Amino acid sequence: MHTLRLLALASGLVAATPALAQQGTKADPTVLAKIKDEGLNRSKVMETAFYLTDVCGPRLANSEGLNRANQWTQKQLTSWGLTKATIEPWGTFGRGWDIEKSYVAMTAPTTTPSSGLLKPGRPAPTAL
Image 1 (cartoon, rainbow, N blue to C red):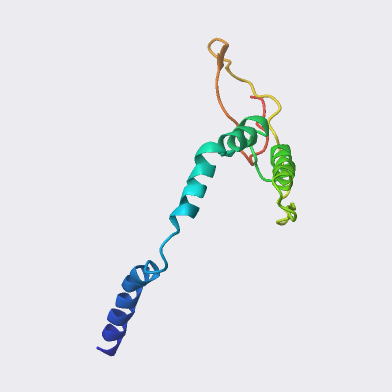
Image 2 (cartoon, rainbow, N blue to C red; image 1 turned 45 degrees about the horizontal axis):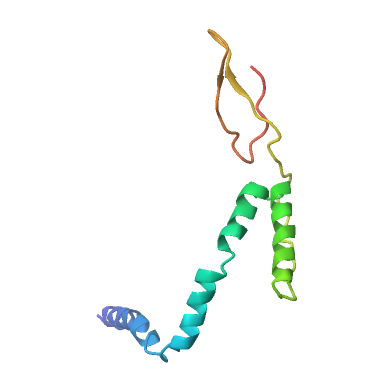
């Protein structure tokens, strides 16, 4: 019975926490207007997303795409005024890889080109 009361009390406290957290100070409308103006009129989100996805390409662990993205991001953050933009090592992953070319074809009963993607982190396929 004692455990049930503790559980009910803990549940009540957990449920009340978000309501208590939202009772802070009111947001300054001037600051909100500045944030909205910055986001709507000077946003770099689409340019950043384009460069990381279309120019740098896939960013698999330990790949050239990840290295390109890291270098570009550090350069961009520095150009935007961040003084401590660094690329931090996160550990060893092993061998990285990039797709240089890929070709898939059906060979029997006739040769027909097909489409397919290589699965990241898998060894190279062998010819049949």
